[in-house]
Amino acid sequence: MKIAYCDHSYHRKTRSTLFLPSLLASEGHTVDYFWDSGWEGGTPVRFSNLEAYDAIVIFQAIPQGLPDCVARHHPNVTFIPMLDQFGIAKGPLFDLRRLWSPFHGSKVLSFSAAVHAIATSNGIASMQCQYMPPNAGRNFAVDGHRFKDSLHAFFWARRPSEISIEMVGQLLCEQQADLSLHVHLPADPGEVETSEQDVRSAFPNCQSLTISHWLESKAEIMRIIRDCDVYIAPRLEEGIGQSFLEALSAGLCVVAPNNGTMNEYIVDGVNGMLYNPASLKPLTFKNIGWICENAHRTAAQLLTNWEEDQGRVLDFILKPSSECYGEQHIYHGIQKGKSGAIPFRLKREMKRVLRKIRG
Image (cartoon, rainbow, N blue to C red):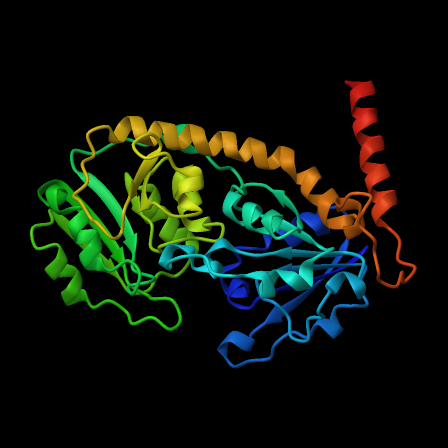
């Protein structure tokens, strides 16, 4: 099957969403990438460039020229919205019917319980799942993570307009005498980078304070993070939240706003800490060891769940949109003679049966 994968071009740099097309390609399907850079003044993706494919996956970035009803133009379209594009953390959720109406009769893959609820409440077939990075929770015991005499924390000031260094200073103000903190300063596009002086002003009594402006690779960032006990989430809300999930998988106590998707993974005081950004209170870390152990167990279980869900996710993306609705659903599009989804699903079912026979 030939699949068109349309995605936000920023993800091309971060590589945070490539797990899904990689999963499709691993099953023998051809995946062509369409990176939408219209958000930064570049070239947007047009829906007409995607229509010739057997299946279309639209990851967050909505292509130009989207029909009023996508299902009338193509029999297999999966839309994957991210929770943070709705701005729920910034206020009431307003009328989104204009956003959802083109996808009536199509499918939504939801990596958030909130997105799943929004999609289904707008009458669109949705499947919910939770992603976890590979090897999540599995290297915690191998690394022999030990807690130090002082608290070690990491904060990347990616979105100072959402979570400033002053806010982090208020959260950790009672820990400064016994705190070792690393602050990574490069900001996201459109944000103003936090100055070193602001960092030092927010933590005047910190036992140990280190600052970085540039790190050569993601591996170097992860090396610093894995040597910590606490990870301060950098954004008010996340779509999937790869960065905090990787910290969770390393057995760190994630400190995050009580917003999605963080609060869909973290239980306050059990496997992490949640706070109200509008009413900051100093945090205490009396049970940090127990919380980190629970974070490790949570990540390991969620990875098992994701691995079990992968077949279900593939089937959902590959089957025609009309199969996700009840008998009352009528597909109004033009069948283009595409094939592949049903044979693929039958092949997977035959593999399952054979495994049971052999096992």
